[in-house]
Image (cartoon, rainbow, N blue to C red; front, top):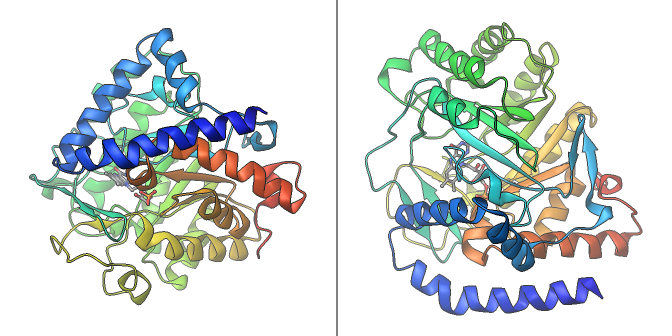
Length: 376
Ligand SMILES: Cc1cc2nc3c(=O)[nH]c(=O)nc-3n(C[C@H](O)[C@H](O)[C@H](O)COP(=O)(O)O)c2cc1C
């Protein structure tokens, strides 16, 4: 009965979003719309009445979706990926929007203005975004002040990165910036993500090589933490590069991998076949549908290679329950998204959770954890 009501509610909200709201929103500059949604999220999160109304419109819960992973209780497996709530402004509205967890950042040691505007574009036909923010964020100290003495009703990950500027382009300076972010923020949140895959960082992806990653993790290890730590991988890495990263992870306190970030490799046949729009720019990383299959392949590879010993968060092109389930069966215990929510509407989270329950029941699973890695 509840499931039927939620389904009807979702159909109504989807229809309003797709036919009325989205056509209007998509006429505005994407970054302005992003900023506007951050303001709306702030208002929703600011008091119990707006949170309750939001939960009425977007909430859904089901025991089959609950998991305890690395000591953290997740009400459902769908989380907001890093990059939407860069400055930790909308954490309080996340639970009522239907999310099971959220990830703030990426946050750098020093504040970072990011790249000059424009730095976000829509690929309307391909259902993707081109992202060239360049790690815009308020910096670790300001965000730590904001989080101090606050309690949140949802698990929260903290994504850290290095500032996107010439000053931190060398290995040593880059490591110092990551280390500062980690030190300043280590008291906050439930898990950490080390973003070694931002496609827009000055000097490329320097911490994907074995030696440099060792150095980075050695330095971060000087700030001890009991909290789980994830490494976020790029979808463009070769199996050899991924295997080397896993080798380094085996010798450090790493608990899992986020597969994956945006792609930078527009020449990759797997990406090319999904791009139906003329490229508005040649720089930036691509999200959404074009990276869905590539990120699932990375999940599969990491799961097989590590024999399921690491927790995997699947991310990239999740627009519906089928996309999420495919990643779960490939080896992901949790899912993250941004682009699907932008193209399909905020009810997408509850649609995915509802759809996952149906898919689990069809396959005879009592809990989502039983489906993890079943396609390997
Ligand atoms: C607007 C935007 C900003 C992003 N910024 C970050 C970031 O700061 N750190 C990060 O690790 N990933 C960032 N990402 C990548 C997402 O976290 C995610 O890995 C990617 O978008 C694939 O998921 P999706 O297809 O569901 O959007 C960003 C993505 C978008 C769309």
